[in-house]
Length: 272
Length: 268
Image (cartoon, rainbow over all chains, first blue to last red; front, side, top):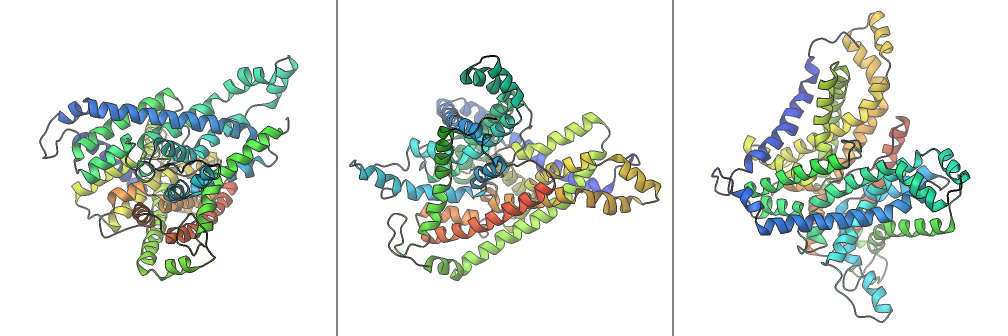
């Protein structure tokens, strides 16, 4: 592949794409963040962002994302672990992944029915003699549905890193007298830590920017950074403030990716 | 390797139950003549009939499919050429820089892509509607195609191209008769993935679609916000079947391309 000194014309569309749809959108978001709703150049959006309203919103968004990520991890880790022990593990893994291909809106819609006042969840509650509860539009329903959606994305990287562990290492640990818990704590867990990090990365960032579930399931009670951006852009039409929040969301994203390491190493799709 | 314990089996069964219950719950009630998702009264196909009789809905489905096919085709073309270009970059730093730029759209949240594209289209003066949706879908699919094609290109031995050159092949021949056939499985996998991403997308489309144009996701969103209609259930059963077909198609090609399993975008 040497005879390629010149910049061939066939690359023009690709580089054009980079300039037009990768670089300029980010530049435009940063640019817009310096304008207020009537188009004046200002730092007010940034000042506003550090006011109590937006700080509280950011904190609560982080808190929800943290809970969602933690619960997903707690559910997904044993799932991934036991999946590696199944006979046809690739098939079972595929079965875990398939629900993630179903349109998110349909899954959210299903939960509108399930958590409804006369839905199956409430039927279950009523059958044990309790009062029907308002499940929909609560923090619980929001976190439950979000965890439901993110589980496959968390299982996959953890499964991959668990599956790569050399079984001889586990045998060695056993032979040296370690209990299964010790083996897990001192051998398996450290060896699969990259999968956990990747899983956290692919769940935490999208969890910060969710807005469909907040609208449909949480009934505007939960506001995440994503919901705030959507609101500023499409409802309030205050693009400047929306862009400012977006700038911070991008910054948070970069920080999280740096903390969890493996830059873009997980490239397993747009789980946004 | 130790075998799966009983506890493990029960745990996995519960996880699978929770993952699939909502999907089958939706499909089950699509046959309900009662009109709600809480009490099943009788079997009916009327909701399916409603889907097929709703001209507006059919047009929306057609829009969605056209956008998906066109965007997948165009992004595959651009992405494949881009990937070949990336492989030819000799300078390591330069190549890494391009690769990082490539991943930006894959990792950034939909809301940000949607919002920034909205600004872009408004500034440039693209009318919101079919064109803006199609362009956005092409834009977010290109990096996915690149990612799917790159590994195949990387594993291709340089000597294949040297041999072709020695045998007197022109650059064009090398591309069409050596490189493209070799990376074909990657191209198909990329195409399928682009197709599913486009069909699946809601958030980006939601930002850049104007009033007159809707894709299926956007339509479902507005229907779902209005409340429960079993038409959505019938629609989701049909979508489930199509999705399953696409997933199987994708795995067929990606297994031939020997690539790792990856989930699509699910997110908001």
